[in-house]
Image (cartoon, rainbow, N blue to C red; front, side):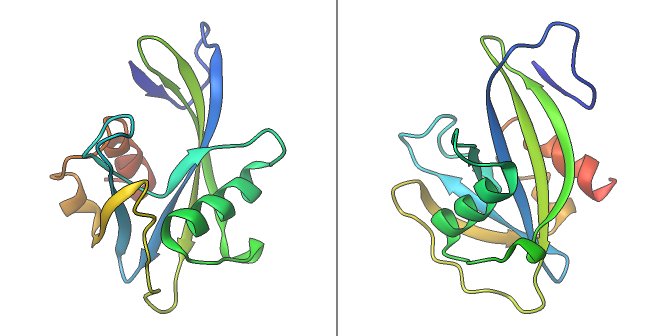
Length: 144
């Protein structure tokens, strides 16, 4: 298991995922996953699989809207990095985006997918119960 900045020699992605650090005033949104989701009761940023008819930008706009009810334009979203994630039984490509809000947006979570949300700063987030690879992504993105 691990995350890689370069594609590993043996890497067979089963799917692609988009994610976004949705930031305001040096804090970002974390969502608490429902009991029935993979890796339940862990926190992660708005994220999910890219549908076959979408590109990564369309997918992250859709996911942010579905998970937080925040509606964004293409110009609001910034691409950060593409990484490669290996689980014991499958691999996937993970696209990292970020959004910097000028005002703290109202967040309305999708209760089917998440129990609650929090705003947290990068340092404090590393002490939380995150989905296993997110702490490495936070360290990478925030350079900590």
